[in-house]
Image 1 (cartoon, rainbow, N blue to C red):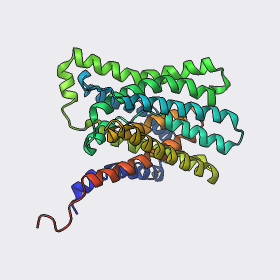
Image 2 (image 1 turned 90 degrees about the vertical axis):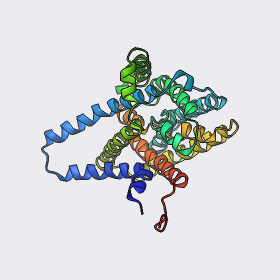
Image 3 (image 1 turned 120 degrees about the vertical axis):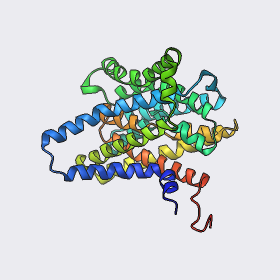
Length: 321
């Protein structure tokens, strides 16, 4: 078996395994409580920075001429937003804690915008990276409005009113999603040399995604170990993330098929920026919902690894002899 091909095709699950194992390795080292607290705080600051950098690098690679608008993009925006709103309303109508956790986690999975690495994976699968990148911008604009709107409804911050919670969240979420787009367009027009430098390394956003994915899985593993999740809550988190992942990939593929762009639409709808989902979950919602983002990351990355393997299978041991 070609080790290089194996690592390339299975880089996503390998990154997740490294993230989970790195948490247990760090936990086994006898750090002082102060050092451990510093590491946790560092992860809290690094995650939004990684999200910002990944989005900026992704948008730097987008030319206005690449942003192809297709009908499936508007259908998916409407469907994802509508489902998130319905889940939010259902969350308000139920009293059972496990059901509320299920609905809140599913809502988070539908609110989460497309992953920054989706364009890279789409291109590797033979899809249209242009329509995918256009949708990435649209869904980030949509998420920048929907997250601050729906999150305070299901979980008002510290018991504050809707508008105060809305303002607190939008100050942290909106710049994180819209800032990279504005910065990338500014770099494109004002610093073309810097733009060429940022786009020189092939798949740089994808490599950065692997690093951030490991960190996100490490954070998720910590939450899973320290929160003391009940079996019912764990089942709710697994089911909500798995169903949300399957539904969005199916919806994306079926809608995109009508526009002869099923690969791009499926990735746009199903592959999520789960680092953002994990951050939003433990920052603004029930911290357990961050686990739903972690589980979703497992589902969509395993599925994409399988698709990449089918598209670029490993050579047989006798091949080339």
